[in-house]
Image 1 (cartoon, rainbow, N blue to C red):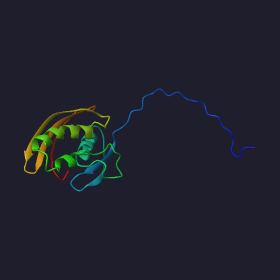
Image 2: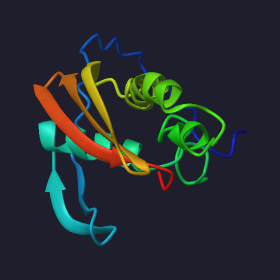
Image 3: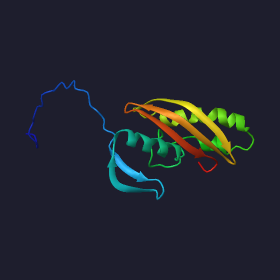
Image 4: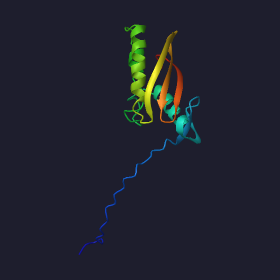
Length: 141
């Protein structure tokens, strides 16, 4: 005699496509805190882009290995030339962003040296539309 009743479940074939939502909490990057407001769509993708640009990959156990960038190693290497750094920045930014299924391409990079940092602008093509991103990155990435 079993301790629990034996119940059989009928297999259900569900061929419907699951649509992932991009709804998330909004982050105030000036204070580093969540605002309590919810965002979605293009605004949520833009927030993810800035989060990936400002987070060093593998530095925080709370994030998966797909979150963040590997710019720090290249930018902090004083033995590499600025030309090499400018060549690597687009590749490293694309690698930081392409893990997100909502992003289809990262293009049109413009990089300009500004003191100890680089002013980077580029386009991010998403399912929701195109984002124009500008960020200053440097050794404190």
